[in-house]
Length: 273
Image (cartoon, rainbow, N blue to C red; front, side, top):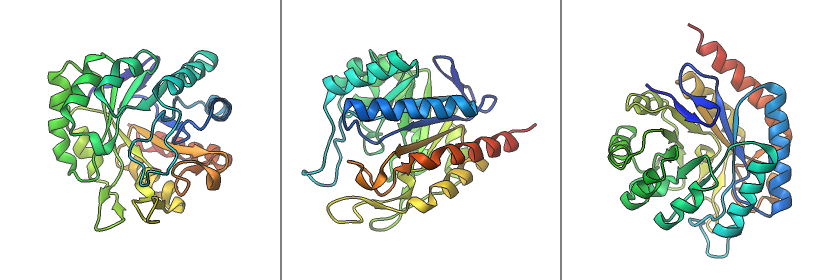
């Protein structure tokens, strides 16, 4: 398995555990900057590489009344400020092929949402930017089916590909995490990320919005690391109950330092040769 380079960060078996952290959605500039500053300070203190993540548009919210974000132009302006002010790499998800080049001008990694992982036009547009791409495995796909996604990206010119597991549909309003997914997807030649917060979701569990079981996030992340994950994705918020998106599963920012340390130590232990 090759590694993926994201600026100075390298993701792969021979490299340190990397984290993708940030609020689910860009709520406003002040909130986003404060989250990014706090996370950079924590990650610098405990010496772990991190990429800041926040979405400019949540296009797949359960309800039409749900908050979606500031939109492409304003969202990228805020992400650019985070990147330039704090000198941290940034990532966000794209939902339309036409957004790929605009996002690539700002972001260090382009993220493909799970629901859209089979959308050929979206994948090829992302690949043509030349930027690293992180594709979330659809909840509806078996891990071995991601082979077709990897082939689409490579045929379109992508060389730096990360695959993310975020749980698999298990009946109605539920997800399960199969630890086998990590080594299976790594066998496709890509480093694997584990999305610990979305894997704890109960999709549509509250009718008009998605529910979740936040208490299982640390357990799922630890299982993923022992299964070989190279990167951990976690959405985090200073006030989870009042988060404008995924309030049931964003991890409390005041608790994240302790969890990151535990995951770093576990990763270092399991990767000793």
